[in-house]
Figure (cartoon, rainbow, N blue to C red):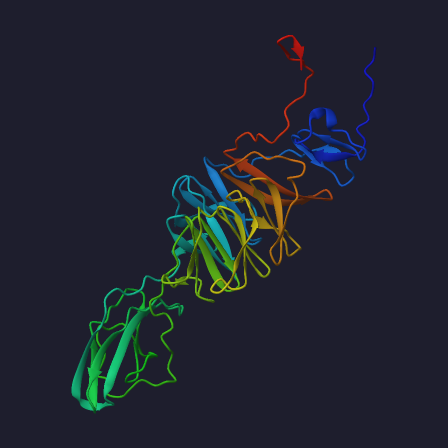
Length: 412
């Protein structure tokens, strides 16, 4: 006897929460699993196109692109990938097995290898982000001859690169100058490739103004007080941004997750950080930072929405579970973002509104990390995530079979 044709009706996608004898509904049919298949907008399945090797490697990971530059890591080397699939090694050391994170800061690419934070430029240049600040205080010596008003004068120094980028400034030192006195500054720390900026306060003042940019260890005797029209010292006690497992950029600040601590930079100074206050601790390791209009989504023990500027923002829980590390991205041509969570794919909207678009139908396997991409092809728009370190989810329905259990002559 010939097999009777089965009418699936409209195909609704994957569903592993229903038992296999309830996959057919009045609206159409679900499938338990779909391998190498795409669900089309017409509610049919088609075989997914194959792939061809474009770039060979031994341990490739951390692929990232901003549409102009593309980077990926292979074992302990970071590579730039051209539009014609030519790879060029970048001078940034990668720790084997450590994921690399990237952020586009108005065209400048910052990347964190976990152990170091770099700024990338083009196909081969990588420099450590930020400038290590001075660590030796200058020596101040007051004298009785001159034109300085009586009072306490403070001085500090910082390093300035030829590009104009400035390091943090060291803790100010002070000296008391007598009436009609003068001031000598010596022991100025210098560093190859940089100039040293010297800042001085007016008598009994708390704002320091630049009086020199030098490559010498000492300045000529100072007999007049600094001009208030000069550049102010704005980097006192600031340090380089630390590296971490995630780096992002939002609303003028570079943001780095290192373990369970979220660090953020000074406004419009992505390489400078205030270690005394510019951080937010969480209860467990951070697995996601995803900027969105009006704030950022952060995942640690739970998923949070941080609205407004990080220096004064409130922190609200939006989901009681966390995101899978490495799976967050933007939804092109929209203001939304998305990520793979412990309970399926989540779409986040501006203002902290989130929706799990997968949990109702699919119980995903728990994973330690993953990677995501947004794909538009053949009239389809798809958000794809590949997960690593998955474990079987007990919430998924098991296969069905008829059976009876006989116990103490009672049929159950």
